[in-house]
Length: 68
Picture (cartoon, rainbow, N blue to C red):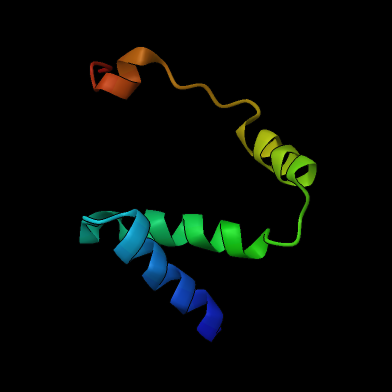
């Protein structure tokens, strides 16, 4: 548990310099994904990501906020 939080602090102070509190949960989700998958191979990690995005589509209008 201590190792996880030390990695989170290193990520927030080193990689991501300016973190807004509103988006903090996204950074924590990313770090937990990295920590939980640290023993997986690249192929296994890629398969997990692909299985999670299947069937989802992000259109340009939704990305830019023009969708009503």
